[in-house]
Image (cartoon, rainbow, N blue to C red; front, side, top):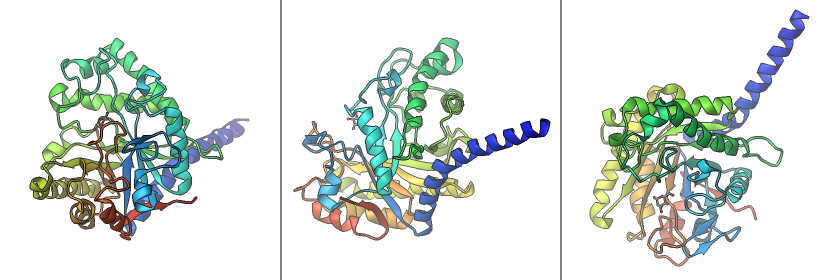
Length: 356
Ligand code: BMA
């Protein structure tokens, strides 16, 4: 009887472990294959749910309409899921997001998530930094922790619900608490202590483990850091991070081009060094030039950076449907369309063929 119990226990552990291994192992394998071939998945935020001057048309994508292919990686945001809302902060329905994640997985592409939450204490948005005690309350007070964990439960349920046609979980990337080395979010450097920031990660991971979330791999994504001390200053620890990321944007059009290239190369070198030391991956977790005033930006500016550094993926930000200047990928008819297409045909850059 005793042996029987042990046998059952071992079988059960194996089952749990293999289901853990399955979704994230598949994802890691894909990422590793790209690295071995020196390839970079190209990503676009909210790509198939809206674009420049259109919203909610199924099957559309500005990237598809300009390059003939879907992005290799879709980027999504969970902001407002922390209250159990139906739609995120940019109006994307979570139901639709779930469906699109499965479609992208079926196409052979990847999915990554960021989170711009409202804080659980005063319920102000991510950019409201007036109260510098928010993170400390979430991490150090019983009431704050309970409120934070209640938010996390919505996220955990959502991740657990990401399934393919067979009902198996889909492995995805999550990069919570991003750009924390800047101070524009309430979890940013000037708005909480190092220990409390790391506490956000610890509580999150503990809760996700309790809720059985086993299909997430984790990305750390400081904003533009030009030295390793700053980059690593709030690093939560090797057990919390799988991918070393960095967010670097191109500002000031042509005048800012050299500076952007330098900053991106420096930040990516730091991310890649730290990743390599630990046998982990690194990625260009967010970038872009708003409105693309440099029409060959993808081939003249981004491509050389990717060729030199070879991050496993790069994500450009969203093409808003209701803010005409707020776009980072070209749309049909935009002057950057032609060279974007050329970029998409480069064998190093991974897009996904449209299977329709
Ligand atoms: C910012 C802008 C905002 C958006 C936010 C979260 O960079 O695109 O309009 O609400 O990201 O997606």
